Image (cartoon, rainbow, N blue to C red; front, side, top):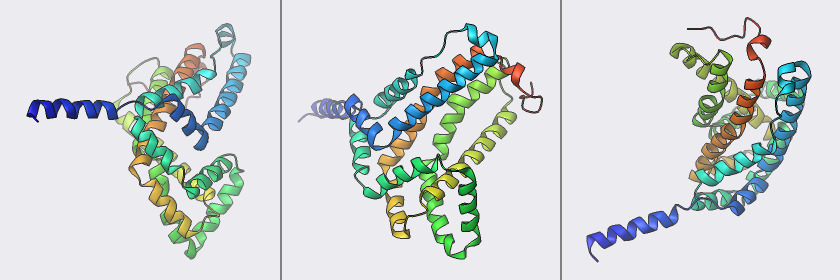
Length: 261
């Protein structure tokens, strides 16, 4: 076979293998990963937020309300366009692991748990010498599920535009932006580690090591990057529409406003 034919064949195989994830795959993913329930919960929460804002702000009341179903539609659309069919197949294969499914269920419960209960459990862990091994494994797991790169996507694609909107569209000073990024990453990392520790409180060390293996797979890396991107993409339109209708400056306290350049 000539070099040209080999090149054409290789390109054809590459194109064939880079098909986007199918809508059916995405729907299956949303079900097994519990993302569907989380999206429904977000739609409910933000719908309530929108109604509350309309009650206290006359300008917001006069504006058209945002269709909360767009959150799910945009989330799905992003996943379909940013995960390949092969990658989604690998991701779904991960969810055949019983330990991962148990963790998904436990995480869902942890996110709605009493903050005081979580704080009490974490305090107990910190005082126990026997818990060091558990904390070490869980921190590694959390860093995979809530990667720094993923958190940065949320900040750059969602938080930064909102901050700029809140200061009248001005560009944020680079030093100030870096401090905000570092602070955001720190807060998000600590919060995610706390949730992960609490969610895995009933897991044995063997189960945690099994979960860590799943967390460190290339498929999980694909999933995490795509999900953080999808979340930012899904929420940005809603928050920006909210900012356009809601006078942010009027409701900011002096100590929370971002300094001008």
